[in-house]
Image 1 (cartoon, helix red, strand yellow):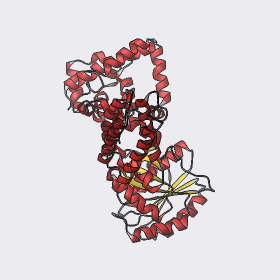
Image 2 (spheres, rainbow, N blue to C red):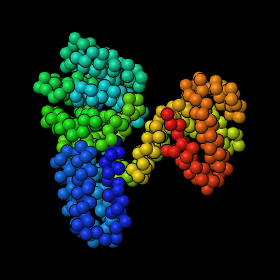
Image 3 (cartoon, rainbow, N blue to C red):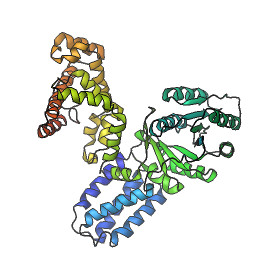
Image 4 (cartoon, rainbow, N blue to C red):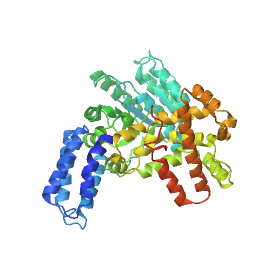
Length: 459
């Protein structure tokens, strides 16, 4: 999300950042470029107009022109206003009520409500240590109930069964009683969607809301629908007392217009963003971090959190202990590191959170994709345990066998081994405490032939 907007804005921001002196003409030119970038990102026109006006007022005032570093001050103003339009700070789920706390999810068909129910259940179980029950009142879409049953099993949530012939309100009443009997902390209710907003849909969701009296009513919306996402959210907010928004499919949205529009048009905060199909692909939405990413400042805090939450700390400690004892970093260790990287969103996901990535040429970014990492893992999986432990054994006939087993070419095996050798040296430097040497090794990895943009295994 935000790739195209960040790319467009970063050059403008870079020009401004170093300016020791700004004039009203400079500022007008800069805000014009920001306006075009926002419109191209499919941000709703009323949002663009309000945002640009606020930036202009602050920029031409004392905040910028009378600052000691006006270029930096203007960048700060743009960041603050972007943050403000998206909601200032993360809005936590409110579960402060007698159990079970009911969370009702609403939205159009295909927005990702059912998968969001499962992701939300996993989030509440792992992050907030809640006992969660889920139920589907979608009696129209074929297999909707079975889909939720399967997903509930995957995330370990309680599932309350329902049938297609039942009335949605009856299902909701029964599920609420079952949640109380099971001493569930939270009941998440999945509702039916339509291809477009209609009276029957709204009447049904309003009836469910009256019966359940949910403490959270979340609108689930597809980020890729751009301005339409904000307009649909606005339509729902007039019918329902929404408490927040879940923005889904953000991994497929390079513009980010919905994220910038929804909060302003509905007055309701974006609480979560979904970025994939996996049960753990749901993240808290932080407007300040999103604004920093838009301005190509990176999102180091989210990167640190991803490491803390998704890296197996026990395995990391074992590897560190192994290195300290002087044992060799082998291909099994490399596979483990690659898998941990994939758990954090892969190389592309990590790069997305680094500062300055908007300046990296698109053709270099395109070479960094998670399929390459998957291929590397497949190659290592095709080796025997002995070959992973002793990579020096990998000669001609063994390479041919491994290439055949992993669906790759011998040249791919050679590239993997070269990357392994670089990682092995890096780990040795780290174990020996040679930080300067480690940094040199990391720089080498990002160049041609390494695991960075110039050195992945292209296909």
